[in-house]
Image (cartoon, rainbow, N blue to C red; front, side, top):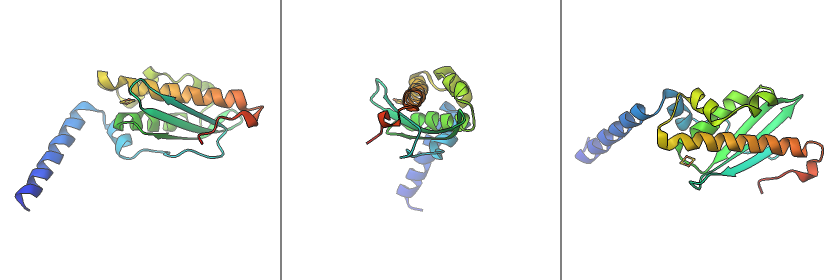
Length: 151
Ligand code: FES
């Protein structure tokens, strides 16, 4: 191994150690391997929210008998944003809409094992975007032509 390769490997290992000190295992897992990434073209509900930091999260949901049968997301945000959105897709899938409507920044923070102070707004953005998606579903379920589509 060359000196440069060793330097790069040591640096990578140090960065990983710092990340592990800062974030929970769950956040790192969803950050590295996000679940349900992508937006469904035939979604029953779609929402897109941009936070003050400029990052955007989109969700799409499929509903049957008031149960969220599929929830997917997309984002241009940071690793923490990815993790929060991915965690939301896991916790709402298979759950009633009433449960999903109760998801807040605090629920996301509790589920993901907490976040550093300067990343807590990522959980708020994810929760707000989910609520926008549910509102879109409720506002358009009887008038599908009003659906707010991504493109
Ligand atoms: Fe803006 Fe994560 S840094 S939502």
